[in-house]
Image (cartoon, rainbow, N blue to C red; front, side):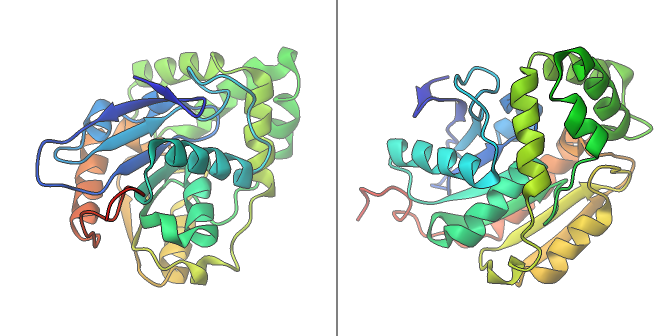
Length: 264
């Protein structure tokens, strides 16, 4: 797994007919491992799962704006000479994907918006507690209480908590600061890329009404709600999410030869 433009990423190259690149963008306090293997290895598709700046094995500091994170993704694409992609983002990653769809439509083939919304206000207590190392464990505990559905495997929740605890509190605070300031509710109508809004029916952090709003406001969008799943829907229902994404990708228009900047 290489590092390009200071971003560490997992790469899977599909073996089928040429398909568009799929870029997976994790959420606040996450890494590329928040995307299960069946999603990181979608059959036939070239898939890239990033660690955002300061997350996982990517060095540097977290960004304090969603636009800043979006620029990091664009810099990474530029270094790879990848002109266009389908962006699939979870929570904060969905905000990054939406920002790319609005500000850089020429780079976007499609948007997979998983457990996210057009506005991502953060509870004041969570935002405050991420700013202090002493209260950071409370943040992890609270997030895990809210992020999973009632039927989630306790071992899955425990593993997620362990991975989140590996992220520096300052990076988590930057993520939540970026999310708290994010609001594109009035700009969704500008998005022209095909979009899928997907979430769990028991999502407490970005409830289904957030996904329904995205589907209602983005001109070429659909919504899918998965039962018995929470905010971490891709971890709780990996096969179902992979299937939904594959179905969406097969309906996303794509002309081979127009992805890399060096292509004719």
